[in-house]
Length: 253
Length: 149
Image (cartoon, rainbow over all chains, first blue to last red; front, side):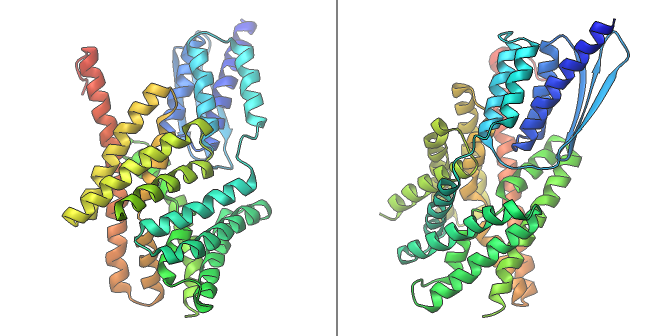
């Protein structure tokens, strides 16, 4: 009886760890719930319930013994699609019966500690190239390509840099968009760029919460009302931060 | 020439977004292709119909369906392809214009633009959900199962 109890707790640990990594890396709500229930079923817990919101996971497992429930708190969220893919492949291995409980737990623990992000400077370079390309896509002139690369790159650099020291995302986003607006204004004044609007739009595209807004509406449509609303609130806050950062600069005009 | 420029820039921009979102290295080119396809559909549809909401809906439908197929084929989560694919369609420029009008005390235009932004992001989400539904229906019909409603 005691053995069975600890076994259930261990299975729940694996499920919750998988769910936690996925949610922190930007996985969709329904995918997190689905993955956790699949893992539980693969280990023999047929009846399990999961309740996932962007800030926490509640998971309960029914079995022969009284139902057990665990709660896990999620405090930080980022977008790291590689980790989502890796958890997905681990859960696939579990459901195919390729790895057992202990192996799954060690794999997930390793994955949680692992840092698989691209190097800092490569991210900044990608943001800078993306800013230039977005400026063209929004019907800008090729003459503004280099200026928007500069503003977008430095803005994103600022975002990542501030985010290390200020844990509140709102302020790093605000400062980053302030930098973008300010640099774009300077570049226009010294005559390097031609269209202020296009340069700023192209550059802030790397910060806009497009993913969050879409996920929020998607969650709402799928019936995950709490996660949809809270993601929407997060997106609104980000949009407000970006808008007000640029707005401060524009009010100098 | 103009379209060629759009093709190249949308490909690079989407792939670069893949890097920012830390998509696995081997999927970056596919992300770029999904984004490029979606953007070109949006660009052409917007040019000929003049309605950006319909154009966004068409483009997201394409992105959604292609992402589902890619995800099935490469055994990776759908989100990797769909997120990168919809990034060019996100109404960032309009959101910026909205904010700018608010700052310049032109609330009338700001509210109108804000409504447009809401409509556009709604149509992105709708396109994604709709493509998922299409995919599920096709799968169920192929599997010979009756739809449970």
